[in-house]
Image 1 (cartoon, helix red, strand yellow):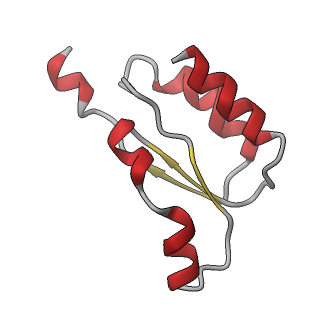
Image 2: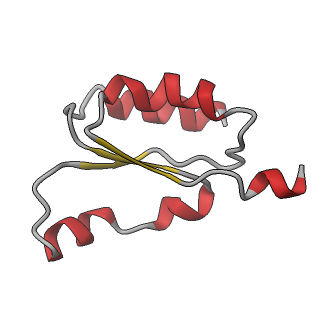
Length: 86
């Protein structure tokens, strides 16, 4: 997970604020954001900050490190699936 944090923090330096962020589990990482934005002519930038092993236990810390710096206009949140097995 540390590598994912470092990657997202590096990408945040290239990103703009006021976009939309998907914050979910590893399964959400494959959502084709560029294709959705283009197909539906969505006006905002979209960023995927989904993590392997995201749970209610670590969500607040990961949000603070990798999502909050983007100051997103909208956040699509998908957590809790891993918590069923914890």
